[in-house]
Length: 95
Ligand SMILES: [Zn+2]
Image (cartoon, rainbow, N blue to C red; front, side, top):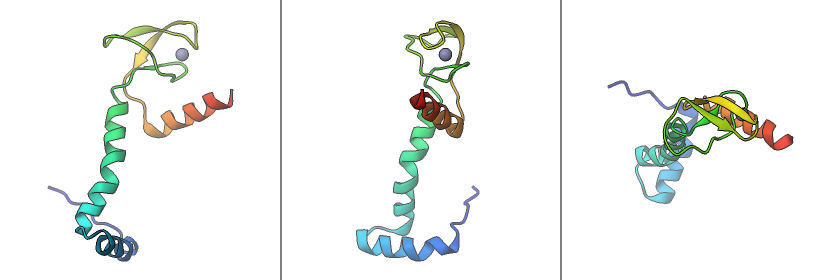
């Protein structure tokens, strides 16, 4: 299996962190990456409005749902790229 390399400038920091926490460097990297990757995978399962990207409250997986923000029936997105997702949430908070 392909194992991507970690850039060399991070290694001294990882080394010090591993000594400090008394864990192998691979474990440190795993602990850092895992929560973010789990969050990334989980958000794919969260239904969003195709128009405004707000979260939709639906009880079962369906193709369309009523969006309270758009006040209309919209298509449901189950996979939103994380950057877009964050951007839309920021924009929504400004309103
Ligand atoms: Zn909407």
